[in-house]
Length: 171
Image (cartoon, rainbow, N blue to C red):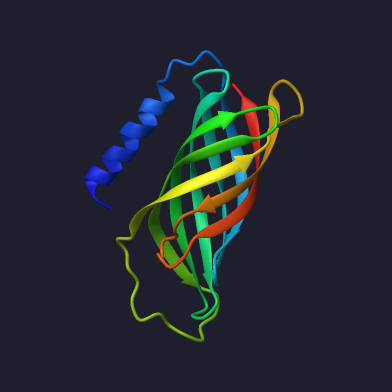
């Protein structure tokens, strides 16, 4: 990944973290499962949400995303950094934004087939949208089940749909 791409991501994250919001910030952990035409993936990681008004918030995070490629018996791993703007209501939350993938590595599920080559410089940006619902357990802890749409994946062959569950803690 080039230094310019890394610098852009760092500047965007710093801008989000330095917003002067009227409301609180939340950190969270997410686990999700996504699928496209023939590849399933799961991701897990941390999220950060910063309110900018009663209804609007920015959300980002850092996730590890694993794809299981059944035709070649390998698992590829990607880093995943989404940046959303999110509209929150009592009924449903709607988020839209960009998602970046960067290649972390791969390993064998079995040794039946060896891949011919591995691309170590994969970096891709896609459009993402999600619907979610905040379920407050108490004034500090919130559950957020979500439905996820990603316009692409690192392989560029189709869109992904998925579902996840986030547990958030109010700072």
